[in-house]
Length: 230
Image (cartoon, rainbow, N blue to C red):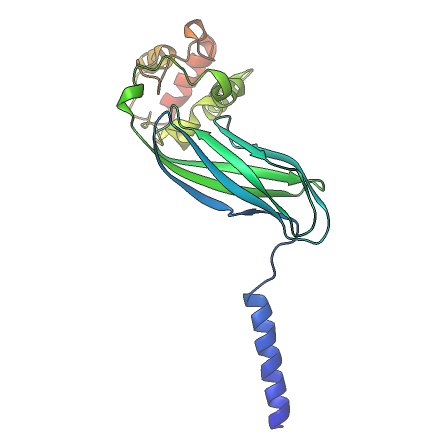
């Protein structure tokens, strides 16, 4: 009886050990899957390297690697990995137009359509030497986040999600940029969205001033934001 009891206890301990320490996920994985890129001054380009590992024994192909926005570029050195191999993934974040705590994602897709995600965090400090910068968040790769998503949008909430939420937060309650709920006059808010505040953090969004929104979109957006505080 004692021998049987010891055997049962040993089996239970073995099962617990397997559950507590699961084997590595097979296939392609990020190493690490979470990376703190430290602190930078606005306008700096911050670089890092993440490894992509093939934890399986079979051949794996990296079909696509993409970031959550245009300001973050990602490029693996190779896209074909035999079992147990790895490749560096070079990451660069352009911090122009950003302040405070930043969080970006990188998504990798293999030949079977399986996706893996890695997360980057970064703290951006105010740079007094960039305040007169002529560059705009509507230029270059930034346009993929601040211009393109607004095209064809006609509903206030959709326009907000397209070009405002990444800075002003969900429900206009504030994020990297201040809350918009303090505004009570739709005409005042309309004017600010159209003309900006004179800084590159909040440029003019009106198309006739180089922004992505037409007059009707701006008016619809302003009315939607004002309605949130009702």
